[in-house]
Amino acid sequence: MCGIAGFWGLQGAGHAEVSSIARHMSAAIAHRGPDADGQWIDPASGIALAHRRLSILDLSAAGAQPMISSCGRYILIFNGEIYNHPDLRKDLLAQTWRGHSDTETLLTAFATWGVEKTLERTIGMFAFALWDRQRRELTLARDRMGEKPLYYGWQGPQPVFLFGSELKALQRHPAFTGEIDRKALCMQLRHSYIPAPYSIYKGIHKLLPGHILQLKLGDENRGDLPPSRPYWSLSEAVERGKDDPFQGNPEDAVEALDALLRDAVGRQMTADVPLGAFLSGGIDSSLVVAMMQAQASRPVKTFTIGFNEAGYNEAVHAKAVAAHLGTDHTELYLSSAQAMDVIPKLPTLYDEPFSDPSQIPTFLVSQLAQRHVTVSLSGDGGDELFGGYSRYFRAERAWGTLDRLPRAFRSTFA
Image (cartoon, rainbow, N blue to C red; front, side, top):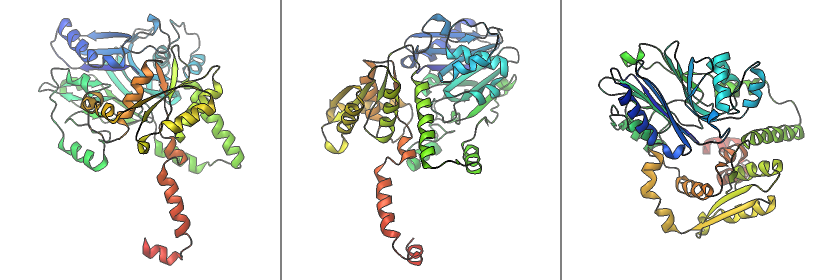
């Protein structure tokens, strides 16, 4: 996990002032990147880019950010990981590489193919800001499923465009107003979270997953916010799947799914630092760890938080999975008091309200894993895809009963 932050449109400010603000914004998200920090500023254009680095690929200075393209035209700050970047490098012929980071691969691809064509070929999770010195154009983009966060918006009486990985970075800019959006509060109460493109603050938005936002020369003077545009659409991907369904039998489907999962997990295991995984014993994390262990040369380090209350304790299931797979397993049992001690920290951890009950154990298991590894994989969405929640089993049992009733009665009852 790295962190990005920046702003555009602070007119008339000197180098020292712009640099100071960029450093303050970067310092607010230092926890995202404790290994290094850097800034790139151009007071004449009113642009400042800041980056906090968690070194995962290419631990040398060749992977430092903000990174300038070899042609000198583009400057990139990037949070995330491009899993197919070795494949992209093979297609970027006759290039002289400074290092082996995915950041350099992505930046070179932008300079060679352009932003949208590069993103169409990219597999990964990411959020980035790219400054085009020639066109004086700022591009923000977010990965297809929105794994990495990116906030943005105009703030202040003389509008300044702010952006960053977390709201706390934007709060450090003197133009930030911090007015609560009452409509967003209603969404929180209705949905238990604030959906993109909204945020808890007026004028600040979340970039939609799979979208690009570009600001051109002149926008920074007017405070204009052009609409973002998609470079990928989930609904279109679903429609393509319906139009061209899988043609094999169930056994073929199992083999194809297994190959896809192995490839996806295997790509995410590439790192120059210690790697582990969260393990809850559920469908998603158990599947990820099984795929990791099948491709690892040594026991995978796995981590679980346990509670003494049986109704909340998943550690027993996780321990059984870890023993079956032969992982190097670490578990930590916590009292309810220790869990409650996290509650006062939640506003500083998550920036805006949401109601996921996993937010406390997620922090605790991350804290545990940090003592042993730098990167930890986790399952996210597996229970939805593979029916891992108890409600799916309850629905199946209920349908087994309802299906025996006459159709007319079922329709009336419904």
